[in-house]
Amino acid sequence: MENKAKHIGKFNIVDLIAVLLIVAVAVFAGMKLLSRGGTESGETAMTRVTYTVKVEGVPAELYETCKAHLPSPLMASGELVGGQIESVEKAPYYVLGPDGTWVEDQEHVTLYFTATTETPSGTVMTTKVGDQEVRIGKKDYILKSEYIEINGGTVVDVQWEPQEP
Image (cartoon, rainbow, N blue to C red):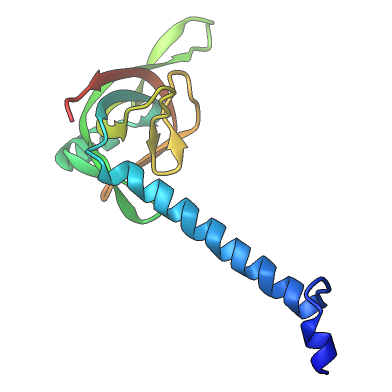
């Protein structure tokens, strides 16, 4: 048995697994330390994002109900995500009449929600609220807060305002 222990050039499977485990732990620890070092050196520059979500054909009474609960903090997956729904505006909703002309639907409206949030600035900026990206033209956007949830919205405007760190 002493002869086998003296052979440095030969590894058995247990030795190989131990070496791989040690290397994996070292790589994981190194990645954690490198990613942590970036945030400790200073505050990350933030960009204030104001965006508008258009929702068409919702019941007219929804406007007053939403307005009563504003401003309202943004949520995703049951948690607050930073930012809030600031305001809501209503506009008429038109449908095609029997004679082929557009007529106003008195029971439905188009709502325009304005929301604000902050996102880290970067060379390629991706604005996210929860897991959803905010981009002009994005359809099926879900705007959600503590009291409001609107499905099927379209992001119609996004404004980015860089903030000082």
